[in-house]
Image (cartoon, rainbow, N blue to C red; front, side, top):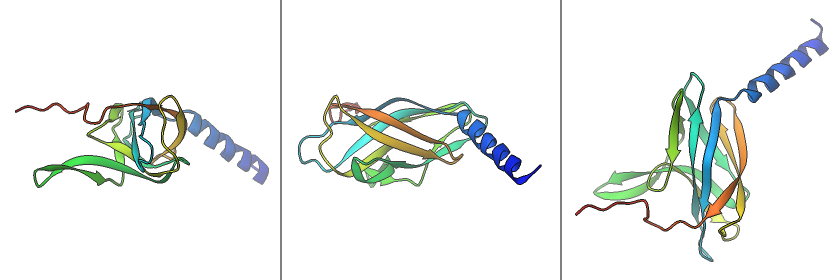
Length: 150
């Protein structure tokens, strides 16, 4: 095979691989913010229809100065938010990013996130898949996800 044919075969393989990505993002949304609030979060369902575990490694958006992957964990009797290096999506399984659990944290917002608008969000996974979506911004009551038992 000559050099040009090799390049074409490699390009076709890359296109074929990316078109059969096993990751699907559903029900994404970002939390609307009041004026002057510097931070928000994004939530979604991640589905992996592939036969190997894949991890969400990174998220980016032009709407925030810093974007991190986070979870909530109990520490010294208090629920605290913690940064995580990745979020695992099991083979043939799903992972939910939700308030009070795993989520994408948006720091240093460029402007308030208004209900009814969208923000661009790009997710990068360990298998090389990148997914960019316009994520709807929704008004979500803080603490609405928590159920207290006394």
